[in-house]
Length: 153
Image (cartoon, rainbow, N blue to C red; front, side, top):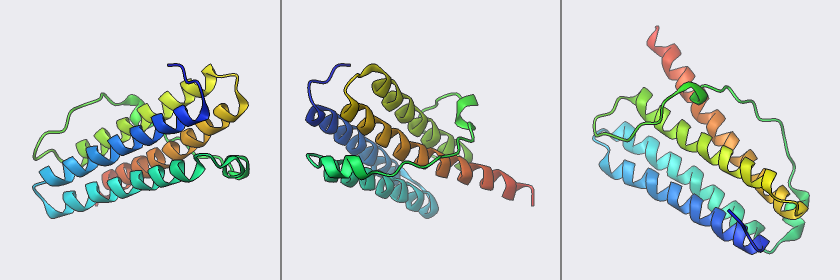
């Protein structure tokens, strides 16, 4: 994948985030339980935050320069899971696996793109996206871990 400018990167990222919003909203529409619908809508809202973040950065070098990176723990739970497709009536752990894999793929994509560019601004932008997706991955992996821990009680 080659990009000619930061604007092309931002457009690509915004499109990817919008796809994620639509994915989660479509799952919310298909949900047969209110609790699942609520979870999917919450996932969609998180992805909407990414759309806003990337849109705010667009053309704003100061925002890119001032972004503060932090260490995000990777529980690596999804790394050992097989990607699946959503099926109506899917149990909660499977739904969380589906969402974790989606975030894991986004982290890998943006990491790969960061590694492939020599443009420092583009690299930083991709690393910002890596960090934001890693936060979502951690949140989902923590939710999955908590869910499994609650099953023992």
